[in-house]
Length: 253
Ligand SMILES: Nc1nc2c(c(=O)[nH]1)N[C@H]1C(S)=C(S)[C@@H](COP(=O)(O)O)O[C@H]1N2
Ligand SMILES: [Mo]
Image (tube, helix red, strand yellow):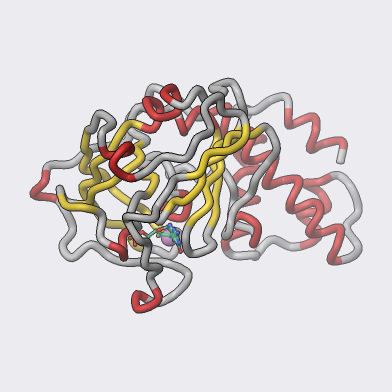
């Protein structure tokens, strides 16, 4: 593994770009030969388990490089309302008739981890937070993208309000449908990352994540959790529903 760790310290060298490209091919098309993988990792790969281990190490390394390259000031493109895709597509790991029904009256957003004020929030309390809206493009790894308008509170404002440790590494999300994902703190604090309560100016419909979703225009669609029920702040790598099945964790768009 020596070579991998050497590259680790030179994140923007042409070599590391090459590694990222290679890793992408491995994960998305699985077309890389074992021989090439052995060359890359600098250790002999003889069984499925060590292949998985090397791939995992490469993907986590790739996450770190992407984290370093992420510019917290750079904004995702915004579009005029005329560019909005109608109808906006629904997607989840199940069909639309299985969308979870969240009861607005009973709902409480749970907070955990490195947060000073961990009391749960009701919907009326959340709705009283200052709001903004954005027209941005959602890009799904399944090969489609669409432009939509989401409104809500800048996630940074919410994290500050609850006294989250903004120096922690990760923010994790749990959802009403057992989906889960997590993001890096820099992305959580990005000015366009919203805790969104509306779609197209209306209360977020069930299929788009009622009562709230994270709208993160700098990340691929699967990093935008719908039906969020719990938010936690941690320094321990939390993974995610698709991430744990091999999709790259950072997955910027
Ligand atoms: N709770 C939850 N959030 C989720 C998903 C899911 O299955 N459950 N799917 C993700 C994926 S892969 C995509 S592309 C978007 C789809 O969001 P949309 O239905 O608003 O288009 O939601 C993301 N967030
Ligand atoms: Mo997706």
